[in-house]
Image 1 (cartoon, rainbow, N blue to C red):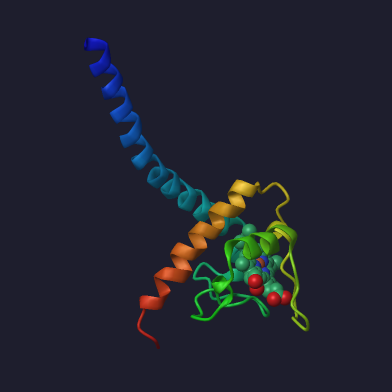
Image 2: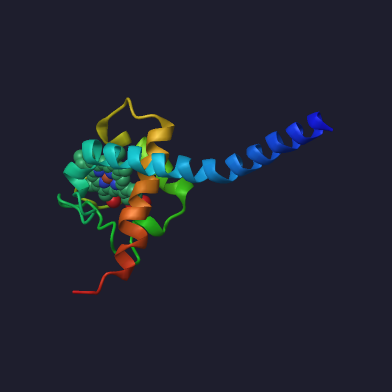
Length: 125
Ligand code: HEC
């Protein structure tokens, strides 16, 4: 009987942790993503995501590039790309070859939080 109760308690703890952990992981992702963005992306894309060089897209635009699904954006960030006729290419990994797949997925989480969701609620100017 005692052992059963112990087992149940452990099981309950595991279930509760399982519900809490993914949220903790997401918060960490966005935090790492913010650092990655500031160090590797903001020079061209701007801290506000609106783009600070010719050819860099406005991430905050309602119908902007962040509407593309994660797999498309992750592929483009990882390998770089250039739209036909664009004055400048997006360099692979923003020019920092040491970025990991986790870093790139984190930076996208950050960009969606920072430029995708919140910006739509901003009053238009
Ligand atoms: C040297 C400047 C530069 C840096 C650094 C840079 N980008 Fe870009 N990025 C660009 C340009 C220019 C484009 C537009 C390319 C085009 O459309 O031809 C672009 C486009 C993009 C797009 C749009 C993709 C699409 O589908 O149109 C995303 C997302 C993106 N960059 C993410 C990032 C991330 C994340 C980083 C940092 C890891 C980064 N960029 C660093 C210049 C840069």
